Amino acid sequence: MPDGLPLTLYAYRLLTAAATPLAPALIAHRLKRGKELPARLNERYGESKVARPPGLLVWVHGASVGELLSVIPLIGRLRERGFGVLCTSGTVTSANLAQQRLPKGVIHQFVILDTPRFVERFFDHWQPDLALFVESDLWPNLIVTSAERGIPLILVNGRVSERSFQRWRRVPATIGALLGCFDLCLAQSAAHAERYRELGAPHVLNTGNLKFDVPEPPADPAGLAALRTAIGERTVIAGASTHAGEEIMLVEAHRRLQGSYPRLITIIAPRHPDRGRGILEIAQAADLKAALRSQGELPGPDTDIYVADTLGELGLIYRLAPIVFVGGSLASHGGQNPIEPIKLGAAILHGPHVWNFAEIYADLDKAHGAEQVADVDELAQRAGAWLKNAGERMATVSAARAMVATLGGGLERTLAALEPYLMQIRLERRASDA
Image (cartoon, rainbow, N blue to C red; front, side, top):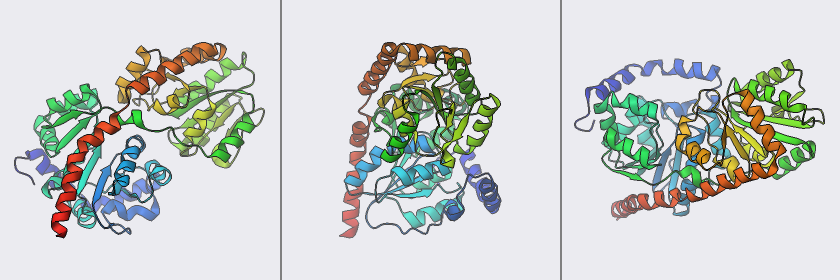
């Protein structure tokens, strides 16, 4: 291990090494819960059926869907410059997204379990020339082994929530040692940059939030046309990336709005699509007619609740719904990213629990580019006001789009900060080839 690491990280390595024999039981448990893909379990152990591509290889790691989405444009720019890219993430939903959205030629693997044996096996196989960690998914063995092997390690779009900041402050030597392994920390805002400095990161830059530069999510033209035809001229609102409890509120809001808007249809896209049938039952218990997209159903003329329990189709929903409630915010999950629906012209409603995107929502609310609602009463009231007053709704959309446009540019600043490292690994490869 690199010199000067605290006893906590040394103990972590010993404990994870001792726990290695338990890995198959852990993976089997996750497999039963639908959190693993049976054909790709070997990737969790650092094994791969995919060969390392020749030439320079940049390894990009993000925890899940949000992190992966934020760096897809960055990955595209790396590919344009001739770099091979290996992308790792930890969830089945992110793996499905990778298959749909990653640029051609990018390799996706599930991140290995963070034990010394599996980590060494991963590095022996892939031998990355540069490692980019996205946001805040810090695995000690992966990070320390990267430093041991002399792989330049950079944190991109870095963020530290207030909750995580307070936790890390209780173990300053541990977080300081981990952040000290990074050659550079690129933070997504000045506030996050300051937190990294306070936690001991030696080299920090504020490059802005990559999420502002993510392009509009795609939509299958045929699927969009079919759904648009099925909905026709009906009034539409949507709940996106919803969590348990929020669907009940959306169903109740629909009931309250139905008297004024009898042709209303509410589309609900749960964060975890496997919850679709449960949402169907919630709607039916409220005496509303519902349909499941995962079953190939389209909304009929009497469908009240349309459950979009599929992956990769939020772009379709955002193109149809003029009002979108962004989930994870009435339920206490920290909120979801509102930028994609804003770019596609939706007016945004959200709850108070948005700490994962606190600065974005604070800026939106201040600019009157979104509305916070505290409960089902306010959700129904605010949605009804916007359905009644299209001018007010469009003013909110315009304010949100203007704010997003002014906060863009993080991609170019990130690339500029990475350029010396990209040049360095090119020069080192040329020297070794010579």
